[in-house]
Length: 213
Image 1 (cartoon, one colour):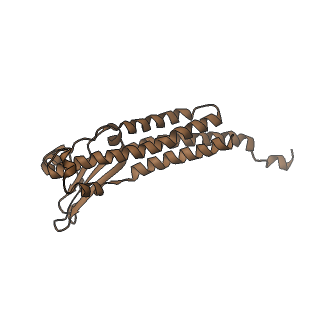
Image 2 (cartoon, helix red, strand yellow):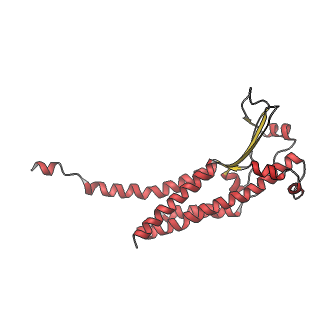
Image 3 (cartoon, helix red, strand yellow):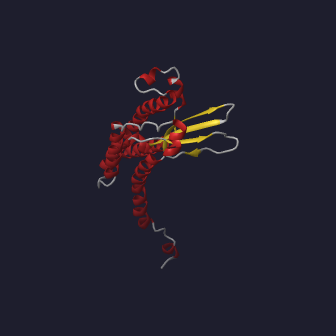
């Protein structure tokens, strides 16, 4: 046997492994996007200057999809005590009542359905149809997830403003500080990781689908 034969790289043996690894990227990304629903999607916080009182409300992706109450964190002196998440009794003592749960978002349900369908599409045998279906489902899911969170932000503003103003909807939207409460809400890392992952999966598969035509 020649020395050259001994040093030949086992390329044919590696290629199926590389293909399998690449094929796992899309389902792994979609699963990661689904797990991001457990992370914070939006939050609002406020601090009163002289008293050093600070509070924060946080909604996860599950709260946006299925409807849920926020996690409320509070401290009466940020210089001495860190913020702590309140239980139901602590919320009643601080606020007098618990924030109203968000209503479920049908748009978010559609996003979850598309994510699930995209995950199923990654099992299609044809590479072209697998990439086409995954891209065609993952990209709209990202758009719908952003839209659902934007709609949920309005409902979250209503809930927080109702507690602060001691009024109820629809009167709460006429409260003079309603706009300030709305401005306090921001989108957080859970949403951006989910949307970024879905977009990446969609774009990569779109490129594969176009290159296979």
